Length: 282
DNA sequence: GAAACGTGGTC
DNA sequence: TGACCAAGTTT
Image: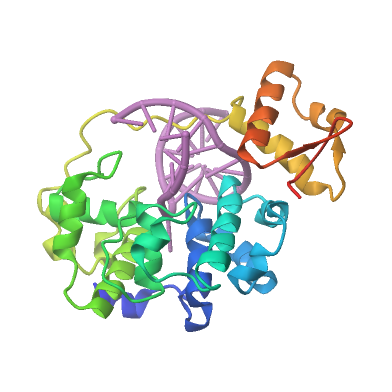
């Protein structure tokens, strides 16, 4: 797996030595539920503008939301800003290397804490993202897709497979993730390019089809999510506070529109001002 | 454990 | 054309 990775790993900016722990951390936030191709340009602009956590922490959170652009799930921008503030205040401006301290930062959960500790600091952690979970499900468990939510059995398996040596474990984590991203994908597998095809339990079992109900589709049209996105797009586009009427124009249904706006304010993504004006948080 | 949370590309 | 998918976290 690692030999395959040595040859086929993509040259991504957050994998270069100069990215540092902050670069790794920013990339992990942006890559949550978001394809690499969409992250690349935003990542470059972000690191150029805020090369250290303290640089971002010194800005209003609204600037982070604006720079987030159309990556989606803008609460991630807010949480990354909050994490940068915590790093500036509690960790002397350096991204912590301790797993528990990473986990305590806003927007960092089980996966991201392990990923930063492993990729940025070369530590030995089970890094279980959707790619790794799929690779393990197929190669080890012999099923086409992993369960909906990460299970104790998956964590146990991931720990058991982890190489003993720290640096090798970190390399292995990146390699297994890359294999899931490039070869053993959800859309389909390319066993002819897979370095562990000869040992893959799912392939050797004849690739039995996934059992159970199809995963719930994520409907989007007409949801509060879509309305929130439209409202926030108006605010991102304006450097000045915008009147209520500008927001009213992007969604016709007043009850849902008001609910979406209230939600954005409650989440801290929008700041209401006097006189019926709104803006990104200052 | 389910549901909410954006956006756009792909087959 | 529309459902599925993309390096998850929080409530």
